[in-house]
Image (cartoon, rainbow, N blue to C red; front, side, top):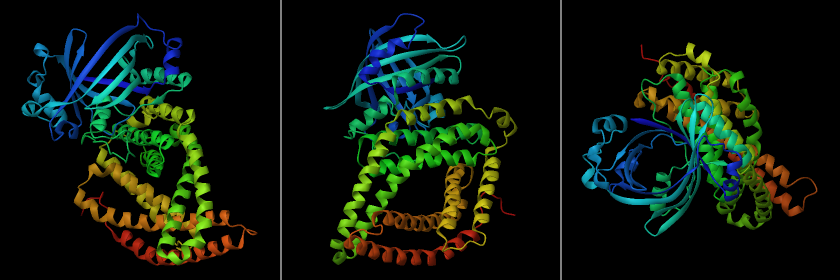
Amino acid sequence: MHVEREIKFHLPPDAAQRLSRHVRPAGPWRRRALSSVYYDTREGRLRRAGVALRLRRDGARRIQTLKAEGGAGGAFAARAEWEMPAPRGRLDVAAFPREEILAATGLDITALAPQLRPVFETRFGRRAATVSVDGATRAEVAVDRGYIAAGARREPIEELEVELKAGDTASMLRYAAGLAAPLSLALAFESKAERGYRLMAGEAAPGPQKWRRPALSELASPAEAFAALFNAALAQVGENARGVARAGDPEYLHQMRVGLRRFRSALLAFRNLVPRKAAKPLTARLRRLMPPLGAARDWDVFCENLVRLGTQAPSRAPAIAPLLARAREKRAAARKRVREAAASRQLQAFLMDALVWVHLAPWTARAARAEIAFALFAANALGRLHRKALKRAGDIDWRDAQQRHRLRIRVKRLRYACDFFAASFAGAAARPYLKSLAALQDVLGDLNDVAVARRLLAELSPRGAPAGMLAAAAYVRRALGARERQLIAALGPAWNAFEKRRVFWQPRG
């Protein structure tokens, strides 16, 4: 079994033309025409198992390849790969190592052979050259241009790939970062196989991508688990950033923000492994990235709530309409700023630098001391975050919005950490705790929406505003006050229910 390690970028035409100025190949550029047919069962068994199977034509050669595409995705892929000549130029899965693939993927590829059928194909030209990254590391730089076809549907391929051939992953990623910066390249998070399946389903573009927790081995070390979770969070950010920049669906923005929060929460959950000093170069930049995203999300939620108020009280809708119109103007301006941020060089540089950072592992010395069983590491981390939440809630005044906000952040970090470490504990044992935690987070989140709505309302209706606007704002404030009182009444019981739950990471005894 070979492990393929590569990073992929979207390649606009102007960058393709300038590429030769930044790549100094160790040998000549080679041009090849490649066509591949991908196979799966009618029910999509391979796709569900995170496996891609193709038969490729490369000049006179016929090559069959099986890749374990699974995991949480990401611009940098490290995939198990089995590749060999195709007997008589036809797909023959019996030639693959059945038991090895079964152990790695859980898929009995030989048993599925009678059910396999072509599902989509790729056709592209590849221009590639080998580069010497340093004395010990070699990589291949490849430009792929062509298309993916699924039935009558087609989608262009315009990609730059950098694949490690020998040496160090971090060195290869640093080299890729050195290409991406001057060429203003955006990371690509979908493999050709993932794009083909999407096209086959009739989806013109990837939809908003929710969190996909990576599968962690029971024997994973804390350092391995952190890298996998960190990369999954980056993938969620990067996959949704492209949607934010190009589409109007606010769910892209929401999921992008969730990815950034998970990214931050991973650093905090693994604080005993990754010290603040090592993470500081990333956290400082993260704080600069978040404000425009938060502002746009606040206006989205505010507009939704105004619409809901008008729906619940139709007689008030005409009076609320001018306020809603002004809020939508603010939302449009905030969305424009966030589209610019999502498409910016700064965001792409942050994602690229974060990928390099996690593979450089600047916390190596501490990681060596933290090589304890992952379940024990998880229990220690969850205990620390749980105690911080309890401490924050001590003597809290539930009517104080700032105090509630600070507790909400603690609760959110704890919930993300529970998700990170869930695989280390029995699901049934964790369920009551997680249910109470989710209920508490929902109440605190709704209260935060009320506090944000008050702030935005003040911005829309300052003193001296037209009388109609002030009257509409007064009605909305009364509605917010009633909602806040209702939520505060529910908050105490929600906290008490959570506080009484037995923590699931400690053994009974």
